[in-house]
Structures are given as structure tokens and as C-alpha cells.
Image 1 (cartoon, rainbow, N blue to C red):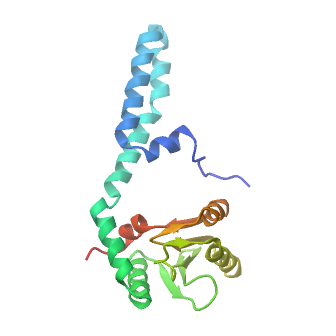
Image 2 (image 1 turned 90 degrees about the vertical axis):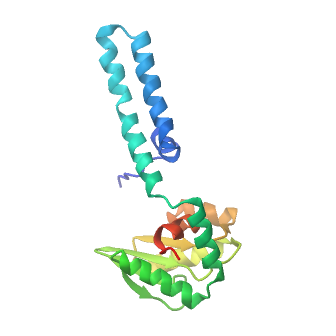
Image 3 (image 1 turned 90 degrees about the horizontal axis):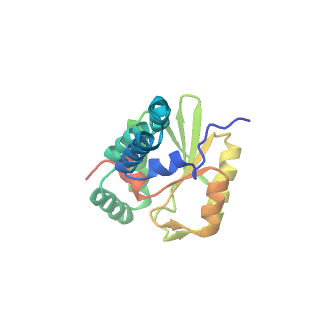
Length: 190
């Protein structure tokens, strides 16, 4: 099966994770080198090589503009840590519903929610969001729920961190990890 997923170690993926101006500097560097070392008739090829970098700078800049501020991330993390399960689940459900998802709460098993948008289903494990370090077992349970419910994706929410085995399993099996930055992006400010 052909995958459109970009390698996380490719130059483009690395530049997308950097501040936008890094790609801008790469653009300027490639253009300067093109003019400095290429014969005039070949400069156009050097400029063509530089063309993707302003696009990457624009994409990175847009992402950075849309990302929640550090203060907002901290505030949402503190607020989420003070909530009980019912409050947290209600806030998540309201946020997803506002974004156009059909939300079904699940009882038992490795998932707490099933989100549907169009044909795509996502199972979400959120009940252990306060755990300081989440182990691999909840990730395995979520993967079982993804298979059982025939969902296309799986997300685990944690404001702490994943253990190394859990992080490895999540990466290998394409489980999205939503941390406080992800929560700050979906939960309303208060």
C-alpha cells in the first residue's frame, strides 16, 4: 500500500518543525549560492531548487500562528489537572461536537470516545489524562479498541508523558498522542 506520510527525518519535515524563518534563511542561502557559484545561464536551476523553501516557511509560519501560546498551554494543563472525569469528558465532547464530530461515549474497553466525521472513525482514550507517566498497557488497550470498532485512527490523551515503551508502541502503531498543546488547541479558553 502506498503511503503519503512524510518521513519525520526528511529535510522538509525537519524544517516544518523549526521556526518559519529557518526555511527563509535556507531559501536565501540557496539563492545566494546559486548566484555565487553557478554560471548565469544555470542560475534559474538554482532558483528552482530554492522554490520549495519559501513554501515550507509559509506552512511553518501558518502552523506557528495557529498554535496556542505557552501561557494558554500552561493554563489549559493546570485546568485539566483540576477537573474530575465527568467535567473533563464533558469539555472534550463539547469541543469535538463544536468541530463537527459525532461523539459517542464508550464504557469499558480501551477507548472512552468514538469520534465520527464523515466516513472516518477515531477511538480516543482519555480517562487516564492525569497520569504522570502512562505505560504501554493503555496504548495496547486502545489499539484493541481500534480494531474491535474498526476505526481508522486512535488518539490517547495525557497531560503527563508516555513511558518509553508506550511512546515506541504509539509511534509504531500510528496512535496520536494528544498532550497539553493538543488540548489547548481544542479546549475553549477559560
